[in-house]
Amino acid sequence: MAIQTRSASKRANNNNENQAAEEQSPADTPPPNRAARRAAQKKEIKESKTAKVTKTTRTIRTTRSTRSVSSASRSKVLNPQTSHYEFGGVAGAIAMLTLLPLLVILFAYGCDKSGGYHPFQRFYNFMTNFDIEFLKHELLSWSYGAAIFYLGIVLQLVVYSYALPGEEVEGAPLRDGTRLKYKINAMSALQSLITLSFMSLRGQGWVMFLWVKAHFADIALFSILVSFLVSIWVYLRSFVGDKMLALGGNTGNPIYDFMIGRELNPRIGKFDIKFFTELRPGLIMWLCLNVCFGVCQWVELGRVTYSMALVLVFQAWYVVDALINESSILTTMDITTDGFGFMLAFGNLCWVPMMYSLQARYLADNPIDLSIPHLVAIVVLQFVGYYIFRSANSQKDAFRKDPKDPKVADLEFIETRAGTRLITSGWWGKARHINYLGDWLMSVAWCLPCGFGSIIPYFYCVYFAILLIHRERRDEEKCHKKYGADWERYCSIVKYHIIPGIY
Ligand SMILES: NC(=O)C1=CN([C@@H]2O[C@H](COP(=O)(O)OP(=O)(O)OC[C@H]3O[C@@H](n4cnc5c(N)ncnc54)[C@H](OP(=O)(O)O)[C@@H]3O)[C@@H](O)[C@H]2O)C=CC1
Ligand SMILES: CC(C)=CCC[C@@H](C)[C@H]1CC=C2C3=C(CC[C@@]21C)[C@@]1(C)CC[C@H](O)C(C)(C)[C@@H]1CC3
Picture 1: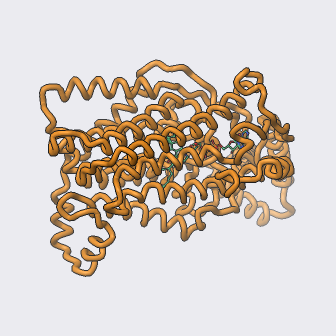
Picture 2: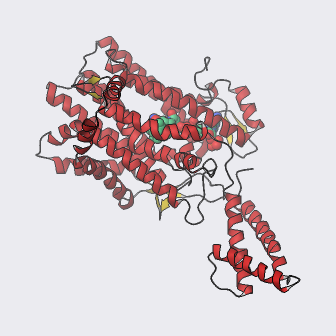
Picture 3: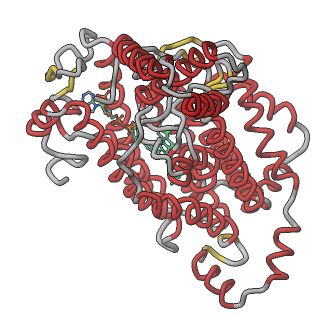
């Protein structure tokens, strides 16, 4: 079984240490003749060198090499080799490493006021009339201000995360039985960022906001670079020391492990890189970009259209809601199960801010006025989506924290042999991932304000449907492995995956 308690893994380690000691004991018996003895000694010296042993006396060599074997066994017990590939294996990993950044570049460079929102058409034209000089010119005209803007926000958030006080909460138990502590202060980080931005931009008019819009593609390009650098760094440091790896990220194939994430909880001291990245830079940068796009419309049009206002308010609401409920990400599969690699680094440092802000950018370039019935329908959709999303997530959180809490005490559930309970009534009795439905309905409510002049702003809700269906399958697989027959029993009670009565 993959999940072990600390004592179980200690027992297993002790067994391995004993076994390792046993494996070492024949070396203590002198080999029958001199030549053989010399050969055996040579072999030992080689082994002990690998284990960074420098002393050559036989006793010390034997002790040290026993220690190195036991450390290797420990890491094998705690970090078994992954045999199951997700996301289409190595081919899928290569596709994600290349196509996702390409898509960001297409949407960043291929969508603007002058050339229109036709990223694929413009890419096709670019490839068929390939001009290296044009490419050189584009790259050389990249503005350093983009790096200052991007790093200014991300580094500020790192400092706030360290420096601001926050409640310390424990994460889910790890497979060695321990729990990590996390500081919850995302909302105060946002408040500090807003305060500092307001103070430094005061009296400068709208210049900075307009500059960001004009240099969006430069910022997007820089965010791709940062995502790759961060992913390379966390991948390399996962080999240093005795790290706990993600059960799904230890195949030994460098491309796949790099993409899916090798180390489970990379940390610098108490600073948890994955926990920080999951929420703050992506969501807060998305909010900042949206504000810039809103200001651009205000400056260019002299007003903010209702459609822009809806997108800005809905998305700000989603971001603030996530920051307020920061501690609830500790139970998401990204934190508990997935390693931190390219997928999450790129997803949060580039994909979320650059792709999720597409609707506001589109509306800044293509202002739209919607009819009142259209607006009302969108607002209703957003409220329904949010209601399902938040109440389902909160119901599960409250139940998992304290099943006797009066808010959830009436819920039905099944006890599992794994020790946790699965809710079978309320929201979680309607579908196994009813929260995804709410989230997806909101994504539609964010695209609809863009009207029907272009299909491009609808990219978000189409991509999001694919992400959620794929995620639901991954989670289903995880739960099936974890709960076995109990999960099958749960599925026979709660039959639908995401949409009650349909799917
Ligand atoms: N905006 C975006 O881009 C994205 C948003 N999201 C959102 O993030 C939120 C969290 O998503 P995610 O972590 O994927 O999944 P969930 O919040 O749905 O959590 C799934 C886990 O909950 C537990 N669980 C499942 N069924 C039950 C039940 N009946 N009773 C109690 N516990 C149960 C299981 O964990 P255990 O092992 O503890 O039993 C399961 O692995 C979602 O609302 C989703 O919409 C997700 C991805 C992207
Ligand atoms: C295409 C690609 C690189 C995909 C990577 C996936 C990531 C973009 C998403 C995986 C899970 C996410 C979550 C949120 C944002 C998107 C990513 C990082 C989230 C922080 C959004 C706000 C929500 O309230 C949330 C906190 C529940 C959510 C957690 C999962």
